[in-house]
Every structure is written in structure tokens, then in C-alpha cells.
Length: 399
Picture 1 (cartoon, helix red, strand yellow):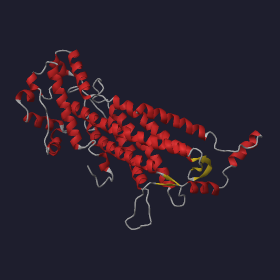
Picture 2 (tube, rainbow, N blue to C red; picture 1 turned 45 degrees about the vertical axis):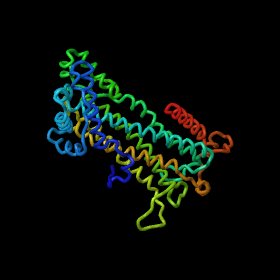
Picture 3 (cartoon, helix red, strand yellow; picture 1 turned 60 degrees about the vertical axis):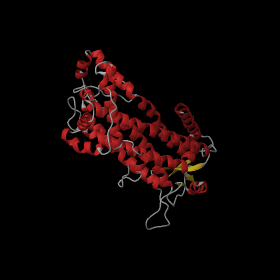
């Protein structure tokens, strides 16, 4: 996919694309049909390989507004192309929400895998930078102004902590993504009728989860926390990356000159410029991720009855947009931190030029009556080591 309105969208490849979503819906229908046959509910000749053809996504999309979602149009196409026994049993016991929610979860899993890989690359790169510069004295700034002496290692460690805060929950989330099978109103009524018992219906739901490598769970229908948890995880990633990008963009200003992207971007009219394009595009994602996550929460809060009248529908494109933008920002951040250049001479010059940096230290010495310490970096190095230890554990566990 490409998107002229979102430079870099191609980096997300087919993740959460129409084609990926269509394939996931077909996979859900295929797996459910197999579960019915395996359970002895549908006859053996009902088993079949379901597939779609080129142009089906367009046709289904155009017909989706008839019923308000793409599942009905998909099922109609699959039945038209199937043998009678398959057509008779296809989709039986399911409702459109079962197929759509489960397919979205299947698509999201691929997104979380990709983001997890990028996070691991970022952790390695940032840990290396923090280690190399843990003793590099640098100026710390608060409210845009010179504040105290610190180290570059401490700054990078804060970036690393943010990435770890985002990355650590991803693996657990990826392995707990839930199947959604509830039938028309979330009670498994039709499936119970097909299976002949509640236990049989629950066994079918668990079998589908196993087939799709998802977590078995009770129907979540209008309890939308599985979706908001996904959104929150993606937003947290973008938050962490946005912090890094903002610091790099600021540090790359010519008047500071402490940081630079490995390969900046040019200008259409000013050839002297070396724009921090990766940082700009990452910040773009960070600024828009939160509102997308908020839309998912608003949809969750707007859930009503046993299937929402609009709130459910608002999730699909919102989550797709948030997911693809997160993947793009992940790739850009990996490129940024692995290629980041640090001008230690400018770092030292900016620190030396700042006035009044030890006024706080002198005030503390006066209070205690002790002579000032030779180094006023406080516990910065201890904090860097704690973050590096955390990073090492993360990389060991994720390898």
C-alpha cells in the first residue's frame, strides 16, 4: 500500500490492508467450517478450501453498506462458489461480529509481531548509545532553559526506558489476543443448537481459538476492552518514539548542533538544509496516535445492547489507521536511533557556555555545611545502569 497523505505508509506493507483483512475473514470462516466438520456436526463433504479472487475486495466493499459490514457480502460470494454441502454449512452458528472481530484480532497479531521486532532493534541501539555516553557530560534543560549538568547517557536511558515501557507489554498482549465467538447476541445460542449442548458449543469456540492460535475466551461482544488494550499499547509506543523524536529534532537545531540524523532530508528550494525528516515523521505519528486511541475508547464507552449501533463500526478504520501508522513510526524510529550522530564537541561547548549551573549545588552545600562534591550528576550513572540491566533482561527474554 501507499498513501500520498502519509509518507512512509508503504513501510507497513500489507499489514491491516483490505487484502489482509479479507484473507483473515476467510481464514475465520475456513477454520469454523473445519471445526464443525471435526466435531461431527457438519458432514465430511462440507469441508472445502475457501478462497477469494482478484477484485473481490472491491466488490465486497461496495456491497458492505447494504448490511453495514463486509461479512454478509463475503459469505454470499463464498457460498456462490461452493459446493452445496459447503454452502449449506458455511457460516452456520456465526454472526458477522464474530467473523469481523476475530479477523481484526488476527490482523493485529501480525502488527504486534512487527512492532515487537522494531522495538527490540531500538532497545539494542539505545542501550549501546547509553553505555557509550554514560560518562559524556552534557547540559540538561528544563522548560527549554539550561538547568544542570547531566550526561548524555542519562538522556538516552530515559528514551530507552520509554521504549521498554512500551515494548514489554507487547509480547503478553500478542499471546493473549482473544477469539470472539458469541453468535447473534453473544449467548452462543445457535452454536448450542448445532452442537446439542452448551459444552459442545463452548468446545467449538475453543477449537476455533486453537485453530487460529488465539486465546479462548468468553464472548466479548459489546465489552470492547480487547480493542482498547490494543489501541493503548500502540499509542504507548508512539508516545515513547515521539519523545525521542522531539529531543532529536531540538538537538539538531543549528544553534545547538548536538544531535543529527544519520541521513536527513532535503528542501525543494533550500539546498543548504538537512532536515530531521525521520524525527518529523515520528512526531507526526505521535501527535495523531492519542486521538485515534481516544476514538477507540469513545467507541467502547458508546457500546449499547448486544451490538452497538455505530460505535462498533467506528473501531475498524480507526484501529487500522492507528496500527499502520504505528508500524511506520516504529520503522522510522529504528532508523533514527541506529543512525543517530552525536557531536560531542558541541555537547561540551554548550555545557561550558551555560551560566549558573552549580547554583543549586552551592545552596545544598551551604545547607549541609559540607564542601560540594566534585561531580554534580547525582545518581545519573546508577540510573543508567538500572536501565541497561532492564534492557539486557528484555533482550534475553525476547530472543
